[in-house]
Image (tube, rainbow, N blue to C red):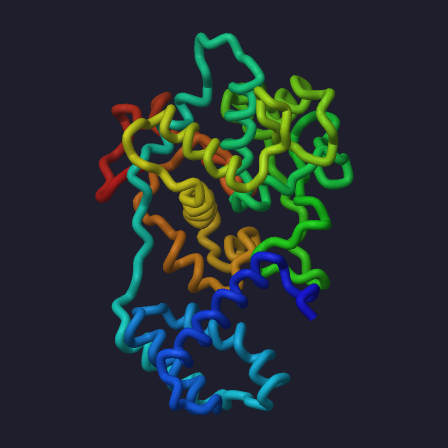
Length: 328
């Protein structure tokens, strides 16, 4: 039965079940029943300030063990009322834009005047692909060099990419997979822009051509494949190198990519599908940053805006109009 779930889901469910057991130990007089389960979920919301989605995730984790072990199934109506009650008492949440500057990080990644080594090509390919796909660190770590899952068109106009089929992303099921993503090239005056993710991908793969095709990213010193934690650390290091002193989170790159894609397409549904979110509300409340300026980069499969006006307008030139809020 556990094989039906991703390993990360199994760990999450085990954590939820342990929390329920701890609740029962603190209240030994309670008999396991539907009322006890509802009391536990209410306690989560009231005493630990868990969000509605987190409370319902605990119920999902408990539902199968309770049904199979105790023949207990919580009715939908009490759950619905509990969810509405939690939301009614919770202030609306709005995602806070990261404090680091995307413009500065992208400027750093051009590596102007720097002799390019494999470590530079790795940083560039990783960050630009993270931005161009909006993938989580786990998805980036699951990318391979096999042409069935990472293929570039002959004229390098686009890169079609998807994680290994052995990997299941969050909110992804074996019979309902997230499709491959087409990443367009970024050209300037008919040539590859220094921030083109397709060119960065090709340059990095060419420089590490002796590596196994089972992984895309490898440690530039040890040659070992990069796993999710290493991917996240390297993304943070790139941000720190480009804009020091902001204690960045790697996952914020995904939020920036999704927000830029939304500001370019004005379609929440499209961004939800590209990002693999279960609902549009998850994207709107946790990832949508409204204070982004037009940026010369590919973001979640969407090409950069066509430059308008004087040169440098989109890179923060003097001709760019002022905008309210933090511009990253």
